[in-house]
Length: 83
Image 1 (cartoon, rainbow, N blue to C red):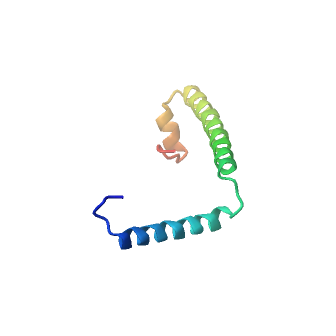
Image 2: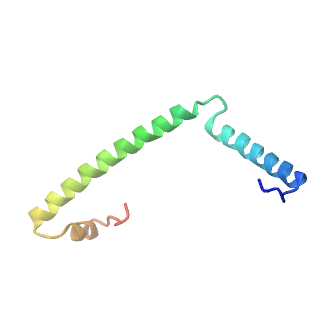
Image 3: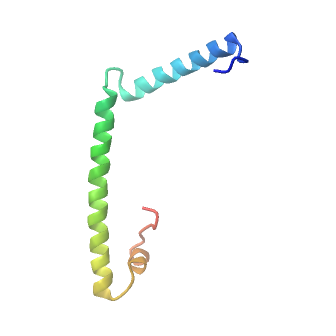
């Protein structure tokens, strides 16, 4: 912290951070290993991306079969562009 920050302000900031840590531990689980949580999250993202890639391949094949664009297939099926 900056030298200009008072000891009282620093103590308040530390207390706020400790309260945030306690809240996050309640949400995640007090005895949960952070590394395990991150590893699981990465595995789930990997599975999601594989499924999304496979879906995009199928949409591309459908677009080619229908002789249209991938964007049009997305529009026809109500698929969002941002997903």
